[in-house]
Length: 439
Length: 102
Image 1 (spheres, each protein chain N blue to C red):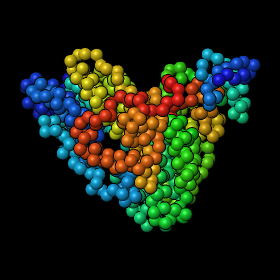
Image 2: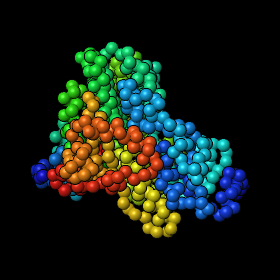
Image 3: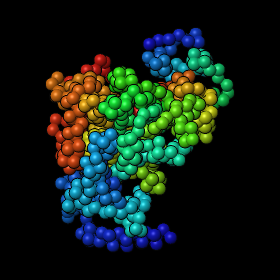
Image 4: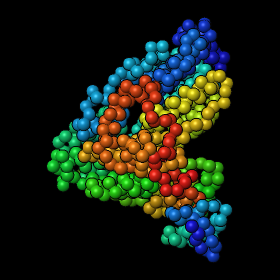
């Protein structure tokens, strides 16, 4: 049976890629054409060229969404056309784009089984299948009130449904909620609360809206200095915070969320970030942890189990933020490591967990944070020490302009794998106000 | 910083978590539980030992994982260690507060 199956793969492989096989080309396959996968295709096609290498990227979707834009959709700051382009326009011509569903990875055989029944052999595999919301993990979340008074803004559909609701909402209890960590872009729910404050002020409805921020963490954020700054902002904007809340269920009938300790929080609108999980493909392939993230070496980005598999962006289990900036910094280091791997050289253990995030705080201002595995976000200047022009961990208009400019940078620089001037893949400690040496 | 508890001196961080598990013993565990207004029953001890073992094996602790451990469900975990069970239980167990990460 095993042999027959194997033959089947070989035959299908010939049918998909006979040209490559005949020329003894090697195959590098990228799964997922989101932020991370697209960047890798753009980095690597300059380096791994035909006739020695064929790069293939597989994704069943047609559209590439600028995911940070989902935050702005509900408040009518961006419209759908601002955040959607096609996947195709960002994939280099010499990279083969397969618009197909991926059924399974067979890591021991170096084979990708496609939804069509075809199979594809790889020499090197990059997994960039991302993370997705899983509201079904929480009892009642996807119940009768889903997209009526219970919303997410981590999907295009969710953000759009919420926009339509907020357009005519006349006020009440707005609860912004995180189900459990880790989540993509951990600052997004805070930004949502800040932007909601600003939005209702602008509509002269702020006194009719009670905003509560509910989190499973002990405070507003995961790192102490940033938590302090952000809690101050929440307080200043009259946003209440309920911490250490581990949700058990959404009570659709009585419109409240209830935690395992019995604590209840009523809502008129619940904006929740459901549990985030890696792609179901990872589970089908038996390669994930309990949230479908692939165990990955945090400094090299190589899979812990398979030497020829690398994992980039939200799909991995490394303890870095699940954010586009992280994928961008990872991509620069991973490109080096893949080139080393194919030459049989030792990998560089260089990735330091570098993340760089703008945090919209409403009223045309934003904060900027820059941090890594070992250094929490602190105050200072960025990217030029002592000069800026961006200020770290302080609200400013310049930071807000940076956040808005970032959409242009995303489409025109980041996805194309161009290095962003003055911002290095590993974090710089210069210009940052650390009190003590951290570990 | 240093702290005297159950007749012994231990080193704790600013949130009161032991910085060196070797300093931990059951008496200290009991005293830390008393500080959290918890009297440890055999069931509490099963959870504490489980957490210590997971820590030893370098498993990242989370409420989800404990709920799936087969030892306690999340509801019971909350009954045993009310309010913030993972934070309280790890403090009593003498292991670091789980990094809820990023």
